[in-house]
Image 1 (cartoon, rainbow, N blue to C red):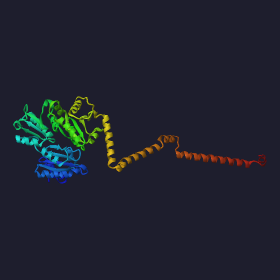
Image 2 (cartoon, rainbow, N blue to C red):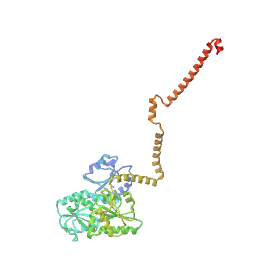
Image 3 (cartoon, one colour):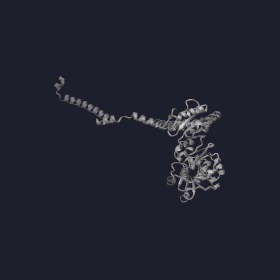
Image 4 (tube, helix red, strand yellow):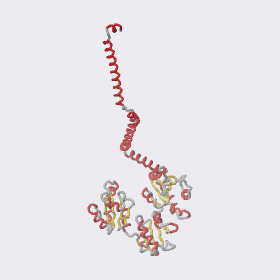
Length: 435
């Protein structure tokens, strides 16, 4: 098994990196996700070795070799990168054995693969749900296509072929051309309508209709399309099938004005509304349709339940022409609301999973704060103490002064009585008799 052990092979890795293709897992010893990936990573190494792949599999402690991790732009753990010469490709897909191996084999090969025959084209078309193909000879468009392929090969395959390789059902109006095959049909790139080739490939690299989860929705945000999602209940196959089929039929309708939707919308379905509820900080009924604008975090929901294609068309049209009310957004109020919502969700999840731990985590700080507030409220103010100091007295000094004054008065009274007694003794007997 071709596994790189960083403690013994770090310098060898640096020397051989430019000569070999490396699939490297940058991990941290304390990372729980890294530990979860460990058995999968072992299987990836074993499978690539068994298939005699040119890709060498390794792992590196990013905390111990932070300089190397920083060199390759590692910002979190685990991070999977394929190193091919001077290029470093970041893996962003699901952390499963099959997905990682497919990524490694795709990126390790040439950016653009040639299809020499019609049989090869048909074989590749059956294997890939989305296929990009350059048709024609050498041209500036091919140079641009190769450049885009080198950048976006982490997402999909890129092929090239001559016109005679294509079946008769594929008719191209001009050569050279870039074509995408998906959903049982094909679309041709038009520079004037579609903008840059890179943006067009990024928008079209998904099937028109697909199951959507949190990871897929994050990737769909890069396409710039509105994401139309049929939110269904996985426990009710009748509702799931009806609404999903309704949306899918709209998506795949290749007649009339419905084809305009392919440029503006990405379609799919999501089972359950938990993720959508947390995303919009609200409640979405099940089943229902929701349209997300990932560029500004707005969303649209129909004012009435959608039951047929005609209602669906009216809803999508109202979103495109701006007549449908938009909710959410990325304004300052929504950001404050997001912070409060996330804090509330975190607290609730802690209490649901472990009530005792929640009481300790949140009760202890509240208790300390309460004691501090009580101490502040019951303590004497500094202004009173300062005033007493200016008058020359503190509480103790004032008590001592009162005691001294009392003693002085007592001593004065006793002194007067002694003087009176002495005067009486000094009087003559006659004066005393008179007295």
